[in-house]
Image (tube, rainbow, N blue to C red; front, side, top):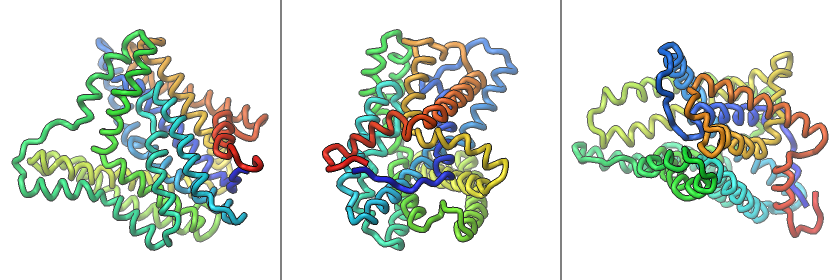
Length: 391
């Protein structure tokens, strides 16, 4: 048997938007193979800098947050669909996460920055959280969003502000990445991504507060599903208008503090945890601005029809996410075309736009012929393997 959750067009479209923005960021980063093209004209170097800064201002730390929010929402919709049939989805969902972890490890071979494995592990927190009432769930999400570990580190730093701190642990792993990604051996690149690269991403996620933030966003997504906040209702629109105003009011001072923190705080020991806290809050605030704007604009008319182009990509987000890793690694890494040597952020942005357009076209074509994307179908069948009847 399967889990047929009701589809919300705005959610599919928003997920498609998140996939596209993630794809653009990965392209301008050469899929984490950082390299500055030598000898570029001054105008192109300046343009590359603008493209980089604007892209990361808009999407860095926000796109994955949208994904996390919708991950929790989808869990609620699937659980609700099974609950209405008198079934408990949690055990089956645990297995579903294990299957997702397998997809993530396969994806990690091509791109170590894979988020699927992290979501699969942290998604287990949704199983006990599903039994919490709304108030308790919101309170727990708020505590996690506050970054409790970083506050403990900050308290220690305030007692010893002159303490010397070393580089983040992730740096020692990231420092080795170019050794195998720039080489011409695909097997060495795969092995490096699954070992050194995976450790780099795990340490980086912890150091930047992503672990607590992801779980909090999962829970907020589940709450959004319970309250019907992505439905086309007057209450939902009122909520998103208020969210837009509140998130905008929060983002401006948070971003200012984040920008000026190096000038305001001399102690590196104090500045590091404080910077992590403020950056995480700033990213979530701008993410909520983006989501609120998206939902409010998705209310009919020509703009809705234009945005709906992204819906097939959102419905096939697993396939699209995996495909962009395979194609991107071939385009930029040394075992493929090796374009990292000759492409700056501006050219990579154009490549990303073309790839995103091709992805959208392919997903639309596929879904005219099939009910699900190829990996989505495989995930669905693996989720319900051994069940008495398939959905």
